[in-house]
Image 1 (spheres, rainbow, N blue to C red):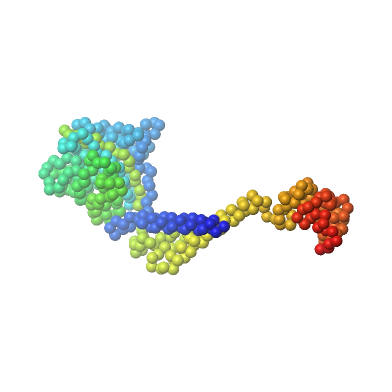
Image 2: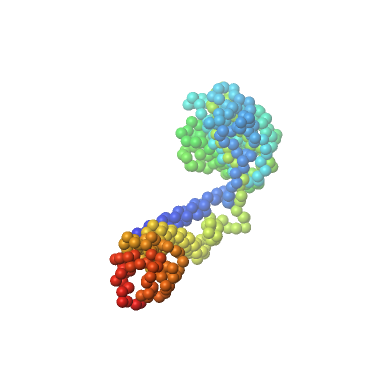
Length: 403
């Protein structure tokens, strides 16, 4: 019994530590960007795409692709092959209505050459959609945001390529090809995202009229590098999401592997940011400023698992008693299987004759108390031969004795 109780307590402690780790992991899941905290996110299915990309009609309900782009249902949407003078695009059919959002894009840029390649891939959040043009395969003089994954330098710069460059278009300004948009960039960073050994991803977060934040993964899995953070960015209302790629005299294969878009829900601005201020699954307010609440939380955890352990131990005891005869079986609380050939699991030659209380038919002329006359006469199987040598119920057991 002691070993079983020890095992139950150890199991309860392990489950409690796991639960606490789960709650702490949930607390740390918030994203802090600038002066704002993204409390949680909701995925937007209408603006997300992943394998197999198309349905049985070889279409996608929420996305269009065209020009030289094609779909490999097991791998990617290839915007351009590693061939010169290619152009392809992928655009959402619906405009995005979320004011605050996070877009995570997994992409791949690869090719055979190690020194001559281009031109690059672009991500768009603009008022117009699916209009081919010279800016990485899309139109110039766009209205909205363009984020360019530029792999080919048209001029000498003090920074290296490949490079991530963001430009905010007003519908009138042309992209400066000669300087790779250097003077028009609102944010940029250099990152060697071409021909990597890990999945390359771009994460773009936006809070309406406040900031734009861009991170990139290219060094290791789940190792996000800050690219740039720009305050006071205002994007068009309800933009379309698009991707395009272009090759010129030099080329690369440009692939979109997945796009996942989330609507971001922010923490209340009037509350001081506190990652421990959260309601747990037990209804306890987790606040580091009040240690008593933590004590109540752990008390509820151990109480919960104590109830589980007690129920489990009771179930084991019930199974054990059922296996070895149950509660009170064998007559007066003791098993009588060894009482002799005339006994069963209860009183009687052939087992239990009746389930009724001890009446006259069961014990002769009297039902109680068990006197000398209680076993006189032909009762229902209780003769002198019924208990020849049993544990106290034999011929000598009731001779000249009264209870």
